[in-house]
Image 1 (cartoon, one colour):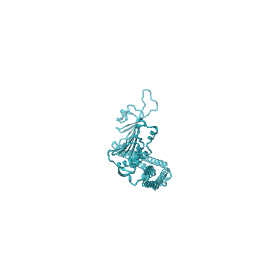
Image 2 (cartoon, rainbow, N blue to C red; image 1 turned 90 degrees about the vertical axis):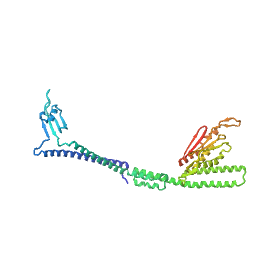
Image 3 (tube, rainbow, N blue to C red; image 1 turned 180 degrees about the vertical axis):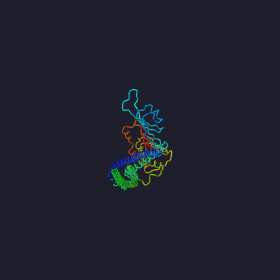
Image 4 (cartoon, helix red, strand yellow; image 1 turned 60 degrees about the horizontal axis):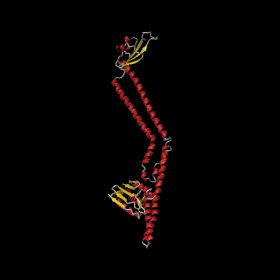
Length: 423
């Protein structure tokens, strides 16, 4: 349980990290300054002790240029401006100051005084400077590493609830949700901050999805029984009728009922196949394509009665498909039925091409029809209107293909309609 929001905790963590690093750097610089002071004084004392009992003086004043050390005389004669100068080769620091209280007259120069500080033996040698530079670099690098480690620890502590929630959500298999998955979130342990709100929303969402999946499974199981039972009863009644003496008109009616019943059975199976979450491992079965194509043609051939349209099957291969056989059969039935329904009399042939990895169904839609006088004419607007849409089942075919990892495409123009099913 956290008393502050995630935003506040992150801000506090950042401020704490900056404060600790600032204190560490401040102490480091303060220690370096004190060490430098002590080092200079110690070196001065050591140099004085080495010349004991005749004590040397590192700091001396000169009023005349001639009294300066020989290495500085030539430079002093150039009348340098007031200030502090350093001569590294001679290991001397020189302060130039003016001793006159009045303005110099024309042509005269302001008298100068020189304060010379001999740092020989006090300043560190060049080789020693490199060692100090290496030491300082090591200290700075160590402080940087400690600061980075501290920042990582503090920020991890601040965003730990987010990482914890992400790990819990990542462990949930969204493809196979169970009724207990939402309880794994346990939103109450995240408090009432932003992470708690997010965890509560995810928990409620998963709970609703789990309830929906349970209702869907119950519905499909019930619908599978309740919808197929009437179809079975009708099919049995039709078989009894076919065994009795029927007139020609009655046989046509029974045949229409049988076809309608078959269409209804196919439609029910199609929608149940789309609604089910699982189908008992049927999505990895292997089956031949040609038997299902032949079965679809026989089931839908009644749609070509009286149209004088031929069906040409060109089998270039004998492919096997891995997937759901019932879904593939439903898809092929839809493609064949749409081709048969939207082909008018004389607008043939309908071609079915079977390749190694695809099935192509093509039907003509713009052939000229012959009227009673023997003249050629275009189809009437009423006839042409039936060409648009090409059946509601093609949208279902698209969903079946997506579910099984197949691909479906349709190409329609003024001359023909071509549907392609690839696997």
